[in-house]
Length: 151
Image (tube, rainbow, N blue to C red):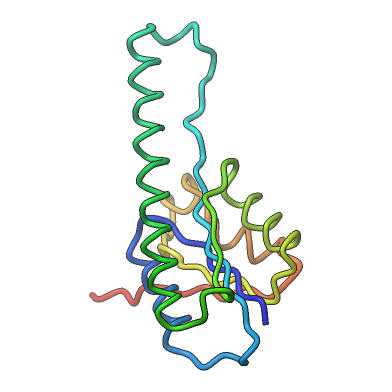
């Protein structure tokens, strides 16, 4: 079984990773962790001062480095439970939904595991749902791990 685990910097992603670690998998299973860096939209550099553009580029660089560091930690965690050669990962760049769907197809994933923030109403309308977009367009099964809301 080939399991693609899509993560980012949230508690929901931690829960998705933990759910993979808590299960028994067929002996020859492979796991691939991806974290997607989506560059900040530049709607035309003419609206930014050079200083603002530099600040945006610096923020992007920090975010990308943060994602790379998190990926290293996630890979180390998985390699503690599965063999070194069964675990791989990468930070991809682009639209989050498309990167996950494309990577799953290219890698030949049997299952995508990912977390969901569980947004509802206007929040979901404006922010969209990466999990729903992936589930609706992926060529393989998608498991969405949700954080239980406490009221």
